[in-house]
Length: 397
Image (cartoon, rainbow, N blue to C red; front, side, top):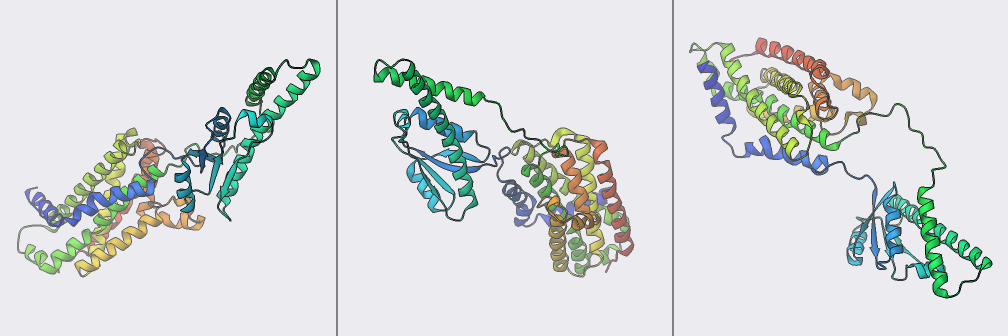
């Protein structure tokens, strides 16, 4: 045991002898997790942002903004004219709605209200914004038309005593029309498919799980570089003259790297829980099984690769290339559902695919140990296969 601990300690000191190693160990994984998640907040509003400049500040302009808030397509963003123009000039907003100072009930009654809508040319988002503004304006205009009709009918029965009385009646009729319109039932029934996914996609969960796997697989595959380094320096030949068995050396080297990988994974899990508000702690047993199975599969692959490479540089290059390609194809960077069906089937030969599936079962779908056991068993199968090949082909020089 002392020899195993000494080998593990030696490899740990060797790995972290460079300050740059901390960049790959913690900083880059967190950076890419946040970037690919689109931030650390909750699920984002998918509606198109519509810059709104309210120069009127009247109850009618407030009603228009409230009507836009109810839209399924756009989300109004109240800004100053300067802010809106800057965003529009930089093409960060497809449309800008300017509500002028004359947008009030008095002008609405006379049919003299106007809106200014600036749109980017050849922009689908701008077209959607225009349609949303038209729908909201039509809703307000319909209420005004109803109020005008009500005033006309009332005047036929009994003329108003003054303009003030007429205005008060019109305002009350407008408010009643708006209330009744808001309470009106939908005339079109919207049916949803019966095969709807019960769990909605969460970019935070996909990013956290994917980067956790990516940045742990790469250094564990990089175990091959340790073997190549020791072989190049002649350390392995000198071990032949000591009573250190091959199994002791391999176990010490692999165990040390696996423990460091588990520490790295736990740090990223804690970051996901505290900062990204993800439910990694739903099933600690399932999480522990998936973490251990994933690290063993990656370490075993690195052991096999260590028997094929000749130099440390070659091993590092292959580890990075294999790690990135396997992470990409395994769904760690983008949802695997975006790939063609034949690719989704083919990538099942990669351990990253199974690791990602198990991690998402935990953090996204909230499942427990029984649900992730198939993925964990497949990963342990990968580990057994690669360890057998790696130990069988291992050479001292």
